[in-house]
Amino acid sequence: MVVTGSQGPVTAVLREALPLSLFLLQWASSGISSITRQPDGKLISVGTDNNNGLVFRLNENGSLDTSFAAGGVHRPNIDQISNDRVTNSVVQPDGKIVIMGVTGDNTTSRRLFLLRYEANGLLDPSFGDGGFIVHNLLNPYGELLLQSNGKFLTSSRDSNLDAATL
Image (cartoon, rainbow, N blue to C red; front, top):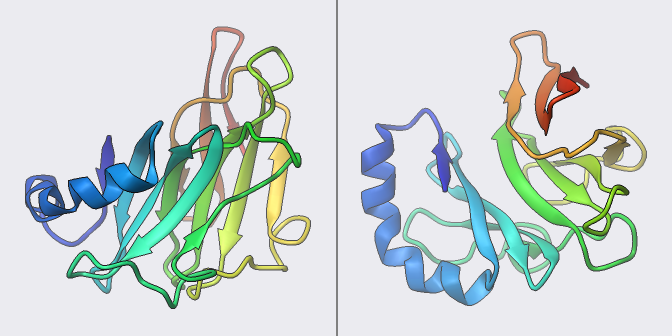
């Protein structure tokens, strides 16, 4: 699990998140891949639940933030099939949230996607095509970084392609 954020050391975030583990397990049978702390202390959690992408936000006290998306949870469905896996998230300085994931079956048709949410959890229609970007990368599992120029850097685990900037 990756925990990122600017509010305190990672060990403190993990210690605070420990009581949430039962809550998190109820949502993600396949796993939570990343938790990002927002400047206001809320936690953006992303992962996969039964081969479907999962994004939800928790309040500082560990309760589900029902002001985010539809009742606190968003399940991205990029290709209208159940193989979207969400792997990473970053929070932009303006409070918008960007997630990265992989869509497609477990063969060579996997593609990287980025979604950007407004602070309230609704897709940002000004980002890409209605709030998302889909990019063909071989084996698109890796990191998502926000550069100082506002561009995103993603990495791939393919020996022929090390990274792509979107």
